[in-house]
Length: 154
Image (cartoon, rainbow, N blue to C red):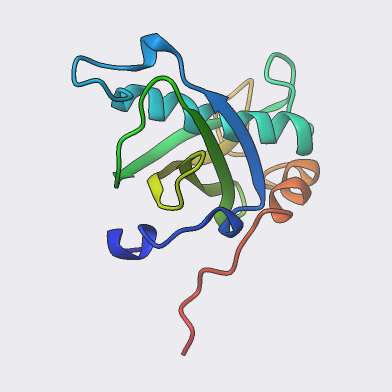
């Protein structure tokens, strides 16, 4: 997906939302949220969703998600103090992999500030290898709730 297409994202393009209040320590020397904080936010909304809606229990689940790819596109800055509204969707769901997209919106502003995310491969905790049967059905059912059709229309 092109950066121009991602820049057109709106909050309603995402099926799950999470609020984050920026902290003083999120700012960098340029007085805006540091790029590493965006990665933290992507990880937070994705794992919140997995725990709340997919039955993932990080310390004990037989399957865990390993990040194999990540991406970020930045369109506007966010800084302290502000409230950020995060949106989550699934763009691709495979047998053992899932590609997430996260939109970052600053409360009170219409334009998306950043779009990013990553791809997880669900593996067996004991072996770090994908399960022969793919991700668990409970995880799959939860992810399907925020899956969007991103196939180009012909």
